Image (cartoon, rainbow, N blue to C red; front, top):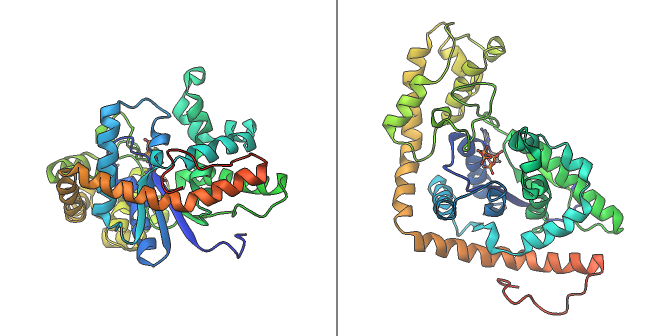
Length: 348
Ligand code: AQP
């Protein structure tokens, strides 16, 4: 349970590890905007330190970070209502992550399926950062004493680890300091699947660009990708239960439902008995109508990188002002002496 003394505070992040996808948009960004507009305190972060757990070209990383910031803004994140910044500008994330590396157990990290997936067969060659990724994620959240974390379904295991870190820290040092967070995994599109394989998550690092819709895709590209999206030869069934063993069909119906704010069963009912060609043509119209204003706004915003940097810098100052006292108190609890402010700490 979240201790009552912790006020409700939302934190979440997205890696600037490539073009943001429809999965990031439906599973995360739209939820971020909803929480912001519900008047809750919201802190959103481009987690660039997570992105470098696998190789990133420096020039592309900088561009992807600005582009991801533009996606947040274009999707409706407002810097006057939410704190928006990139992780590496607030040193407290990395500092608390080291402490959490010493709280987290090897066994916990060894069980993380994302590490297994991303490291693949060649684990010996994976970075230590990729292995320790969930401890940094716990630090991202707990350095703000965040209580609620909206994410897609794939992050569930990492959030359970964040809870374990908070519980172990509080137990080891006999304090009630870090909140035990609530994952917020809600909506019809908590796991958007690849357009090429309905059993695999849509991911920005999938080698096939045809597997995903990027938020920067033009109307023509969206049309091409959705028309070529894998389906089966059966007509559409009238309810989701009857699509249980048809993952590609389920995925496209779920995407339609999420984009049109409908229940998946009512979408299935509307198209019952029809072939996928008709359905896909309506899905293209819907996706283009919803996504084109976002990509156009992203395009406009990325023309002015200094304005994006200004927004991120301002957000980093606000974020550091919240994180610094929490980090300072963490040091005290552990017994680490900290007698002066860090030289380059923003807002500390
Ligand atoms: N396919 C998805 N469906 C629903 N939600 C998704 N998210 C990601 N993919 C989907 C959610 O987006 C948020 C940010 O995720 P991330 O980019 O930081 O990392 P990820 O989950 O590893 O996403 P990717 O696209 O697969 O990135 P890469 O390829 O770089 O690893 C999270 O809330 C996530 O759940």
